[in-house]
Image 1 (spheres, rainbow, N blue to C red):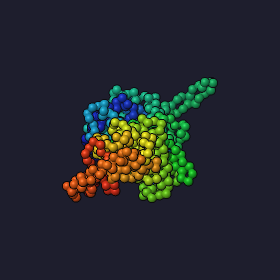
Image 2: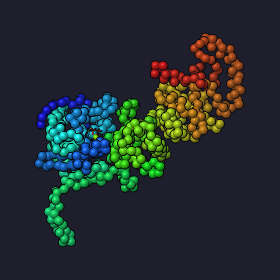
Image 3: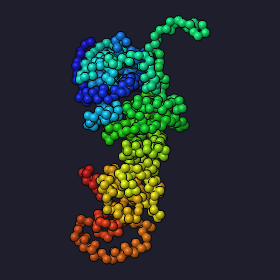
Image 4: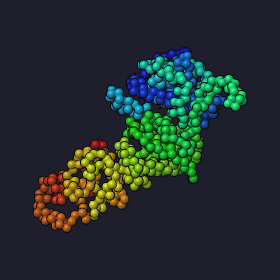
Length: 569
Ligand code: ADP
Ligand code: MG
């Protein structure tokens, strides 16, 4: 080897390695899943690149990953003939964590192992999981299109540093040699390895091969001769793209493992929807809703979107054109029969087929959520707690599905004594009073502020439910939501509140009396406050508080004013 360099891991990598080795120990076999998953990604990337440069295959287009164990050396080797890595790519990919959200992740670590291991599960560890079972890892790799003597060897004991050296490697692709820790020798066992592949990697679309020793000629059960079997590589997984298989043949376990492969998430998905669409636009979609929000859900530059295939050929990760922004947490695969193989992000951007697929996928997700809400309220609640604030962006973004999205919303309300957002608009409508035709709500900075709003007094007295909104986005949401099920929304802090039929005759009379009594007072208060207020009026809404500030019916609400001020306007 030549040009050997020693590098230190990025601090976060060191932390991650420490944490992972200790916390994922009980689930250590997942290292194989991660490495096979990377090999499959490398095959996908090569196929894609070869679309425009067929010579990259170097006469070897049968892409596969091979797993073998060497008992004498105590090593397990995973080798692929995918895209490989250049020296720069090795330094970038195997020395740092490039993932977005990394900073948030590390800021959340508490030092409490049990808690942190939960977190790491969400973060994903990928390649570094090799160090759970190995005390030394050697990666030998040559990038497609590069010469044999332009290969690289990366070696690390997973402590604080690694070396990189220039080497020769005849075959394209990546070979990962795990020098197993003394107490991890169980992974040298052929059957153990096979069963792990079956459990976690059956859905991988390229063949996962294991070496089968030669078998001498022997006698069959009926006395016939079974010929000698030379040693050969045997495919041990199904090796077909999972989404192309028939739904009825795919187990929940397979769907879950496939999710982990496409999403790079460690946890199980909450739900999924697998559909083959035929007709004018033909495509297959397999869409997943994660159980947990990613660390970077609120990062605008966050990668999101579906893994795009065209006629089974991988085209790109994170194709965000097939989902509206308010569904950016959805993961999965889209395989189109209509898009051209040379499709680019630019072409996708403004494309009739993209539009049709996007509409279809959006409907699928909304329907999946509606069903979940109907059939499994607890599950839906856990979805809402993770992603509710993103769904609230929906009515502003997706005019066509406004009503559907509104049906998915959940709020706190005066009906419950809790800040938990559990009340749907349908629940609310079901409890409306005779003669009530509006959905009343109040927005505030916090649940407590909403709950203690003086504007609520009259509603409490009359037993009318009010939705209590206290998330930053609620004001924005309500400015785009005018009605649901033909009932209009009414902020209780805005303008003249006409409770319509809810005010009975007696009350009206009493109110008129009161108005006469205070005529002079209104004018006096207005004189004192002057320009600071638009008008001073007697309110029938307050029962305990002497006065409150009300926004103009057509002006901005006080909450919106605060938002604008916070935004520096
Ligand atoms: P992820 O798969 O989520 O990107 P990993 O830690 O599993 O994260 O891998 C880090 C990166 O290293 C990959 O994104 C890829 O660029 C590179 N890599 C890992 N394994 C291989 C491989 N077998 N062939 C080519 N590149 C690889
Ligand atoms: Mg990976």
